[in-house]
Each structure stands twice: as structure tokens, then as C-alpha cells.
Image (tube, rainbow, N blue to C red):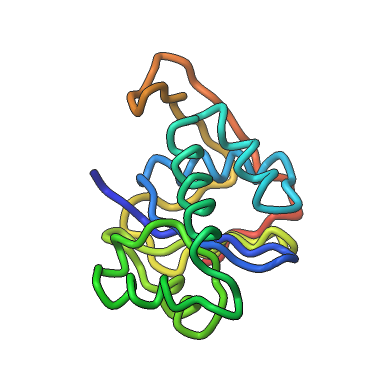
Length: 160
């Protein structure tokens, strides 16, 4: 499976996770609904692939159980043991987690800045993010015959 790193910034901070490349369209579709924060973005993404969204939420819940801004040592130990592209979802708490959040996975790195309404394709060798598009809804990790369509509002920028 082709994977890409997503780093999502909102007014409360940043999270980072590696996901399947088909999630590029799902997240762009969710952005077309003008999410204000990570929770809204995941809520808007869930109808397209509930398993993917649930895995991100579960990963962040586990991260939160073992790490705080004052004590991120548990995650630092994990970062020493596994490749950056295999890290579970995490919150950006310090310089080390920020560095990890900017490390591309196999096909690249996309940063979503929700407050500035920007999608930044730092590196993307899979498929460019497009202002309009369509994708397949997935159930149980498999594509279905159901399609979704999206169109990013004019105030969203895709860089580059």
C-alpha cells in the first residue's frame, strides 16, 4: 500500500499521521466543508473511510494516554526504535515531534493548515491535490461502488 504523511495544523496545535494515499482526496473533500479544527476534519472525513478515521483517532488517544507536553519521553523512545514512516499518529509537542511531523513517508508529506485554509504539498509523488475531484467511499478498507465529489471553496489554497 502506498502511504503518505499528513500533518494537520489548527489553532490548538498540530498532529501527524501516516495514511493511505487514497486519503489525499478524502481529506481534500473534508476540507471543502470548511473544518475549523482536527475533530471537524476527521468528522467530515469519516463517511469516506470510517476505518481510517477510527485508526487515527485511536492512535491519538493512545498517544495522549502516554504523553503530555511536559513529558513526551514515551514517544521519544518510540521515535528512537521505529522509522518515522511507521510511527503511529501523534501530537506535535516539541522540536523532536515537530521534526518527525515534517518527515515524508513513502510518497511524501502533505501539510493541512486549517486556520489559514492551505494544503501544502511539501512532497507528493502519488497524485497532486486538486481543487475538485471525486473518490470512492471505502468500507472495511475496500473501495465500494459509491462515489463522493468535492470542490474546495475559493478561499482554500493548494501550494504548490
